Length: 166
Length: 282
Image (tube, rainbow over all chains, first blue to last red; front, side, top):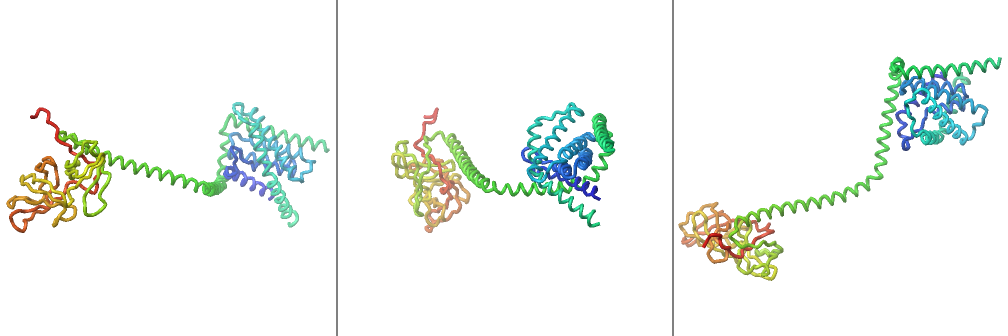
């Protein structure tokens, strides 16, 4: 049931990202709600959950929007795992730290994206990656506290509903 | 045991990475493999997408409308100014267009009546009262205009100059009660005197008197100047007969004549200074 709830949230968030995302667009940069969700899950629940969630959402993105099956899945899987693993023993209480982790996580995601492009799609040119990666990392860091709080509340609710209540 | 679990986890991790890499590589080279998964998933996700897309459009429309409100006042003022400017241009255009048409008609008239030595003049004033029909034109002695010169337009006779300054002249118009000009019925060649707007002529019409009692004048006959009296040259259109009646003494008859010129809309006129010698003539 927990898996289904997360899956439903992923589907809704992905659809919202692709349609409502333009409302939050500043210049050419949109916030990546889905990536921030993966990063927050990785921060809260660890590398395994981050990797699985990244893999699932990535696969969904690949199927619905992507051109190559597994491309986004691989990048989000690795990002979720590395961020979850790297922050496993770190204190994540203050908002600034959450923002910092999401900022670094977004940069890591873009780095893995670049490497994956080199490896799998040689003809693809990434363009101005650094300004794009840094500005999207800033934007994602801004929404990170809200997403983090939402995931925390969701976890508490799910824990109460599936573990305490029943 | 712990090492084994760690290796197991690393093994899974590598396995997933390799599997995903394989999938990416496979779909890079053969996209048709993708279609098997693509269609059913998009079929499921599409309604959600459509719902969010609808919300997105509504929100964007609302946000755009609200943000436009801030610019609407400024835009409205700018548009009003622009409209005012365009209206001015429109008025000017209509004015120039009408003036152009008038001047063309006058030029045509001038070319057709090359036997007359004429000077064009602009109407610059009009008697403000109701009793006199006098206009002031912007040409005077400096332009060779003197008293008792016929004033015409392309439509017909206006009147004659009665008072002349250096660069202005007063013109007594046909409808003034002081007017008296020799005229004739073009068809029957009967002569008479055209007085101004005297009884029983209705407003806007003149009375032509001293017409012979046996003259067969009918409504619609054209009245032209007869040339007698020496002020107005012969043959200039004056108007047309709208009514013919016998005088009370039955010795003469009179005609009510509607002038060809619309005196309320006079803007440019010609003053006939004299007649040119016709080339080849005596």
